[in-house]
Length: 79
Image 1 (cartoon, rainbow, N blue to C red):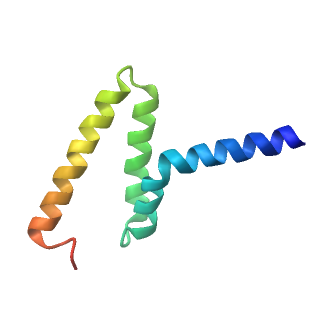
Image 2: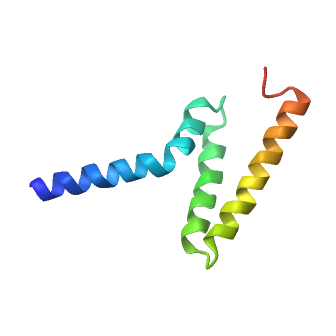
Image 3: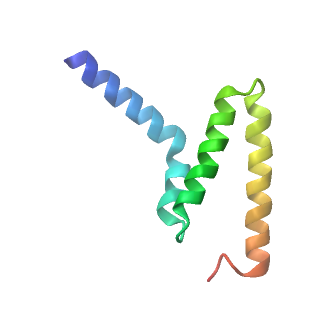
């Protein structure tokens, strides 16, 4: 019983530590959470299964940075 509880706490803290920013997106996304969830699921799955996960992470990071810049430039992020 103690081992199971310890494993659950350790695994939960690992998940929270590695995915807190994704969880923040889910909480703050104004509607469309299903689309964000599907998109982030694809990203996380591709990082787990593709042979070059760091490359995938970098490509997604650049895409998200460009999307944030575009949102700031159009004023959509501030509304």
